[in-house]
Length: 210
Image (cartoon, rainbow, N blue to C red; front, side):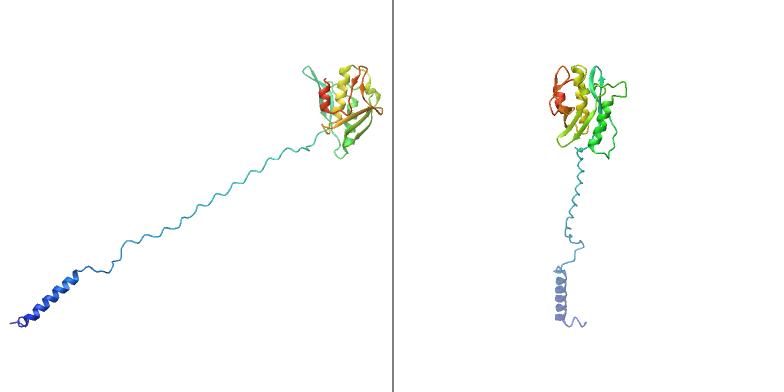
């Protein structure tokens, strides 16, 4: 008889212990098993898209200069088709000269008559510029008596237009006073062409025609 057979109670106790250990080994462990899956990462903060930089506004187109230089001109007579017109010819002047000196040179050139055959002049030969004065009010001219001689109404209107337009070539809106040997010009020619004082280009266009 073996040693274990002599102690039946010991065998029963070992069997019970084995069964107990087997039962405990089958119990699921309460210790959490680390998951192989990584926990979802916290959502990264959304990066704001950079705001587009505002496009630079285009530079405004400068308005035309209201004081743009006006070139002095002599106004001759010429035909455009069948119509007689006042035809400007730019006249070179010394830019360093005072406006009064410049305009005096332009008017004296007008009184000399045109150099080209395709231009005409209604101002009588021998007409002189006695004096000229430019002020804030406008332009004052004194002409010799030859200005009033000869020609009919058409010639009178044409020569008046030449003087008005040439005298205002430095300032197209200038008022022009005309006197003859220091006497204000009120009536021009034997047909009695009335002349208002002062006169502007607009007034000439409204009251006379070539």
